[in-house]
Each structure stands twice: as C-alpha cells, then as structure tokens.
Image (cartoon, rainbow, N blue to C red):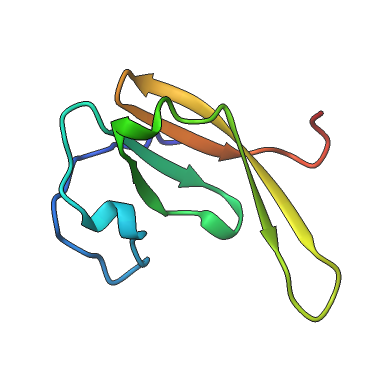
Length: 94
C-alpha cells in the first residue's frame, strides 16, 4: 500500500477528478488539505477553510438515485496539523 502525498496546489484543476468549490478558492496556511481514498469520493481533494474549524473525524456520503440510498462513511487519519486523509470505512467496521 502506498502512502498518498499531499501537495498544496493553487488554482490548478485536474482532468482526472473535479475539484470542489473550496479547492478552487484562495487558501491560507492554516487551511486543511484533505484527500479521500476509496468509495465514490476516491481521489477527491478538498480544502477546508480554517474558519470552518477542525476537519470532522467522520464524513458520511449519501448517494440518492432510483434505487435504495447508498451510504459510505469516511474516517479521518491526520497526517499533519493541516493535512489528512479520509479513508473509506469498511462495511464490517462500527
């Protein structure tokens, strides 16, 4: 398993995955860079502005479509004070 590398990139959208609105706004040193690994958000990089506080320990992503709703949970694994990786929680975890 390789360790993801987070590099602060300013105003450079990628073709592989669309960036969130937060990722396109100017960043400050105390903003958090967050990478998602696994599930439907795999590869997404999000910039959480410091004014919103610390990143949440768990994120729930709900996908609604014609069938039943699909719920994925991501758990935060901090790398530094300003960077972290949200890993998809396995279905067998609590």
